[in-house]
Length: 472
Image (cartoon, rainbow, N blue to C red):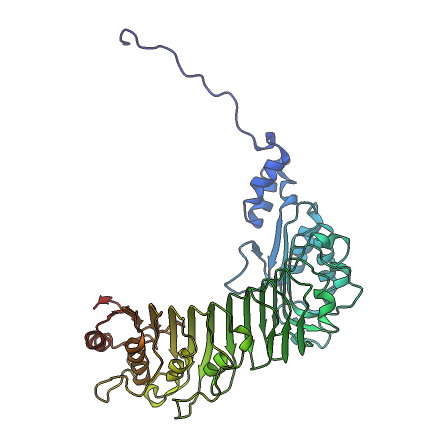
């Protein structure tokens, strides 16, 4: 029974049903694009009007490998039906609205014609991003796949903004039309016949250039015309010299042997990463052999220690300048010693820090690759034998892989003693490059005991990041 004043009206019943096909075509396409490619194609069987919706799907990326890490936009395909499936999708796709096209598969030379056809489709469809990775195809035959630059730089190439080519070869030449919108170029395991500058000069808006383990470029020269270039990453042993004239360069990464690195006029350089391969003093080389990076504010160093001369108090070669602007230093050091307390190599870092007077943050990852012992058992670890200049700006220090080995203790005590404003240090026993057997049986209690004693000695806090973190 209704009380006085209570409304007797009833809400109207919904008489219309939402139908996706009633939406504008561009909205339908947008909705489909939010699905993975495999699911987008599957929608074609739901209704007659949906059959063609997926054919404007914006990201066509196909992965025929079994690797765990893959592009999030990629669809996994089995090896035996990879070519047939890719060809089928391309034939049915409308070739409009394509944002990204990618192939990741090991191709036999007999099927290189398919790759040409797929690249032609991507260019004709005005793809903004092209990623072709042929996965070690160059190892199968002498005749590697030739990425068709003349096709890639045809009329449609003006739409390409990002291009990644892996495992093949290219033949740059002066008559290349150019990539007027290309901002990112990645070359991996590519053999280069001709002058790479002929290609680079036709990419006036290039912002990010990576060249990894490529062949045919002994002298890599980045011309001054690439004034938009901000990030340059180089890896490999084939390059003998690097000469860069890009005034806007802000980020530089190099992995390889000690070679001349000439960064002319790169006054905006903010960050550098150096990984020196082979040799006895790779840690020292990172600080002494590359004067072009002296202006950086952030430096990442990757080094290996195999053996070390006992004369640790003097660098084999003094740096060619001071890292006056360097504020943040990260060092990842791989140490190859069966007996961790038998070497003095890690103490090199203390001497390198003498040339970084304004340093504020030190992050040190130490990884003992042949660990057979645990802690230093020869009496009290005092840190004697390690010397460095006074630091008036160092505020943050973090060390991983810290097991109270003799040289680790010497370095830590040296830093605590000579860092005027440092109030706190953080140490973590685990190695960052995870290995279960090397990260087991960590003597946490002994590390805590050392931290407690050392904290009292220097009057500075030490946090041990272990299973039971402790603030001392």
